[in-house]
Length: 206
Image 1 (cartoon, helix red, strand yellow):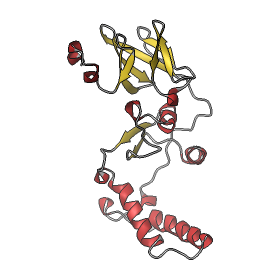
Image 2 (cartoon, helix red, strand yellow):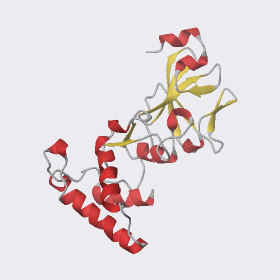
Image 3 (cartoon, one colour):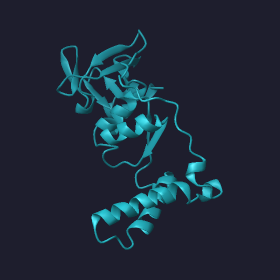
Image 4 (cartoon, one colour):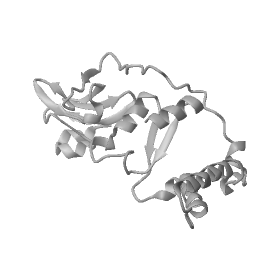
């Protein structure tokens, strides 16, 4: 995160980051939440993940990797210093000389505009509508509801969640504007999909 902090301070915050489903971008937990995308959410960055095994959904990123492998690793340099120089040369050439067929072979440097979204030194706490319930995730990765513990994820430790009731004892759970999952108070758990509660009324969820 330190490297990303430096980049965000220098170039501003993006609106969206697109990634695959590997670490550190996704996990096997609820909604694939990780410490990284929790931080992005706090910064107001929307995280979009492509479908599994679908690199074609992120073609620009895949092209960059393909060109980097072709120009920097076939064959690799004999030592680390030489390899680093070759990688720095690639960054310059890719950004300032190599154009993309998608943009009529115009190099990225001629299209890039620095983001006007400034990196915040202090994170603003989430605000939720007054009629929502709110819960603070404790150090054990869950919150209390009617004296029962509801597990969420350790990635949201000490984070404030908003709960919007959409049916009797059924809630949508949010962290800022990021949807986390469905909370069923009768089962004291959160699921990605309401169908996992095996309850008839959840089929009416909008």
